[in-house]
Structure formats: structure tokens, C-alpha cells
Amino acid sequence: MNALSPFIRPNDYGFFGDYGGPIENNQLQVIMKDIENAFRTAMKDPEYLEEIERLRKTYVGRPSPVYHARRLSPKDGARIYLKREDLNHTGAHKINHCICEVLLAKRMGKKKVLAETGAGQHGVALATACALMDMECEIHMGVVDMKKEHPNVSRMKILGCTLIPVSEGAGTLKEAVDSAFGSYMKDPENNFFAIGSVVGPAPYPDMVATFQSVVGREAREQFLEATGGLPTEVAACVGGGSNAIGLFNGFLDDESVEIVGVEPAGEGLEGHRHAATLTLGKPGYLHGFRCYYLQDDAGNPSPVHSIASGLDYPGVGPQHCHLKDIGRARYEVATDTECLDAFLKLSRLEGIIPAFESAHAIAYALRRAPDLTPDKSILVNLSGRGDKDIDFAIDRLAL
Image (cartoon, rainbow, N blue to C red):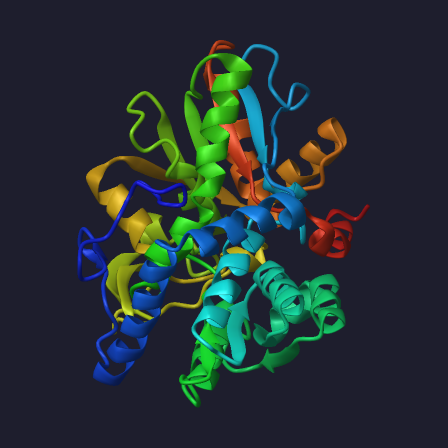
């Protein structure tokens, strides 16, 4: 196994158990196969791998540290640790796969990279990588998310990308995905579609997970070095699921470590004002792959909601669906209110302002830690920082 490979891999058809798989359109299967072949070839090329490692160390700022959040941890409960992906260049885990995807696009001779973004972190990271590597960049973003996450909108504009507002439907992440893929299909010969999570048809879930697996590999080594043992639980927020699978892949073979994904319960699990896909979704096909997704009686994707723009997606990565089915991971929820409470507590107790997405996992840790003894530990992937969310938070919290 090479230094970038995750532990959970698909079969030859791109399935993780019953989930994932190739896109059904024959023309698109050829395009996806070209990307997969380029990816597999690149992963065997020492030059490509060495360039990734160089950029991780000198540009992204890896390894990101593991931090013991002593004030956040309850006095008589489990110790809470944070994997500080918020300290990466651009402020989140997204730069991990964006650097690799843009390098791959250049190897393939592509002229333009296209993508969707929800909270804007994927868009910022991709625009950053494209600026670094002299590639044209086009980002599609829902108008609702653009208003909520305007600091990231400004960053993308400064970085020189073309930003496409998407007003159809709910004007959020699902619509941005649809719009970006439609633009990509106008010229797939010269365009490269850089999906921002472990979703979509093969090879994207495996490819993004591979690039994100550095998070779990580092975290496991760092935790062992700091404590002499492994964490009792590892936890991460789950929308599409890239930051979570990046962390989880480092611990899947450790049977003593519980693996916990935290989904957005939004305003509650009644109705549609949530995005608790693995909690309430059903299997089906969405955006070219099989996964659990929130759907109406006719099988159409349901409207979704989360205070965290990066989590308001009706589907989820196939790796997570498989881990749920085989019982290796469990999936909890946190509401908007719990998210805001965790956001403020981490800010005021540790001086770390988290992204709303990451605050869902913090909310779970705050709820769970008091039920465990002080010899237990919870390692949370702090997947992003909250610069993008501060204006919205001040308004909601009336600070």
C-alpha cells in the first residue's frame, strides 16, 4: 500500500459494498474511465507523489497538529482532542484533495477546472490550487450560500476564478452540483470536474478519499506519540463525507476505536429542515452513484437544510453508506442550536473559532464526553475554521 492509499477500497466496478459504482451513461463512462486511468497511473508515478508531498509540507503546512482541548474537555469525562485541519492553508481540509486534483488535471492536459461549492471552502481551495498551477478555474455556488458565506465569495474572486451564481431550486449545494456538471459536459475534453467530496460516480469517491487519507494517517501517528495509545472514539462531521473518511481511514483496522459520523439535524428531524441522510435516508441513485439519500415518495431528492452550507446535501459518500451497513461506523446528529452552542464554547474556552460544519462534530463530543470516564478520549476532526461563518454567527447569536 503506498503512502497515499486509504484502507477502504472499492471493487473493480467502483462499488463499496452496495454503494457507489460507475455512472450509467455510456458516453460519460468513457470520460470517467479516462480520469480513473490517469489517477491510477499518477499514483504509481514517484514524481507525482513527490510533488504532492513537497506541496503538503511547504505550501499547505502539513502535518497539521493534534491538540488536547483541556478546557473544552469535561472535568470528569473523556478527554477531547482536535485534529487541526483548520490550520491548513485556506483554512480547511479541502486543500488536501484540491492540490492533488489540479496536479492530475495538468497531467491530463486539461485547460479548465470546474467545481461546485457549498460553504465555499472547496471553491477557495480549488481556486488557490489553480492560481498556483496556472489553471483556469470555474466555481458554481448557490445564491443562498453566496449570501451566507460572502467572505469565501470574496476570496474566490480575489484568487481569479470565474464564479457562477446558481439560483435554481433551493439555491444551495445540490443545485450547484447540477450546474457545475452541466457546464463540465459542454467540453469534457478540455475541462476537468473536481468534485469537492467523496460523492459522485467512480472514480471520485475513491480518488478524493485517497487524497484525504493523509488526515487519518497523520492523526493516528500523532495520537500514539502524544498519549501512548489510540483514541476511544474518532468523530467528524458528515455532509458528503470527505473530511470524515479522511480521518476514519486511519483507524478502520483498529477494532478498539469507535468511528462516529455526525450529520446535521438542522431544525429537527421532523419535516425537511435537516440533512440527516444516513439517519433518515434510503438507498437509491443520486448524481451518478448509489448511496443513501433523502427522498420523497417518488424517489426525488428532498429539500435539505443545515446552518452549515457545506453539509446541506441530500446524499452522502458511498464509503459511509457501506460503513453504516456493516456496522463499522455509527452516525449521530447535531442540531443547528447544538452547532451554535459548540461554536461559541470552542471559541471561548480554547480560542479556536470553528467552521459551522466542524462544530457539529464538536457538539457530539460535548454531548458524549461526560458519559465516558477520564481515561477515555475522543479525537475530533476540526475540518475547518470559522472565518466564513463569523458574520452569520454574530447575527444568530445576537453578539
